[in-house]
Length: 299
Image (cartoon, rainbow, N blue to C red; front, side, top):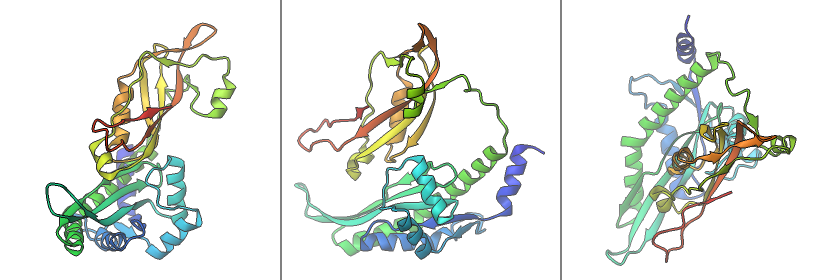
């Protein structure tokens, strides 16, 4: 029997457990989290409930117990630890607020938004992020429009993403693959770099900086994206793995940028070798006076 068939049967044999954490400490956040919890279990397009929602109070208590304070910029190890503490397969976290906006081109208005992050416990990876928004003349009208948007658009998409990721992870679990990267020297950790102090690390011919995305700008987010990157003995980029994600399109922007880079290869005793390194990009909000915007700093 194929790995895909085994994965499909395993997926069908059980329901996928999901936890919904608070969306910040605001009333809008509490209402968004409640709405998401209510709708997730009834959003399967085929009319079948395959998601099992965990008790929200227990999930919140478990998250607080390991010190989670609502971060939307997590390493995969931290993301795994949070999901494991709650005992779920996937979880939703984020931030939702209703704020008053002013503009020189229109009267003051209110904006409600929800930054929703869907995370896998098994992989620690960010499965999906979205930031639906709504505007209105009053705070209550803006929030009502946001909740309606979640009903009609967001929740079914979140459920579909969870089920697709769960099936994919089951398939990968049943697959048996050889470690084709066994020859790669790991310099991505302090321990790895220390064990290979005699090695000259790779250096880029030209440093490229990923753009600070429009989505990140609208959310006014500051974040760090870490990637583990394999650089071959020819100096070309191989596999790229995001090990600290940020959402808002920043992860994808980093991967796209790293793909465009070329390196002087790492060497040992004058001979080029393949290595795995950690590339870190720090994103900061650009100064309002600088319309072009600072993009990112790389470490």
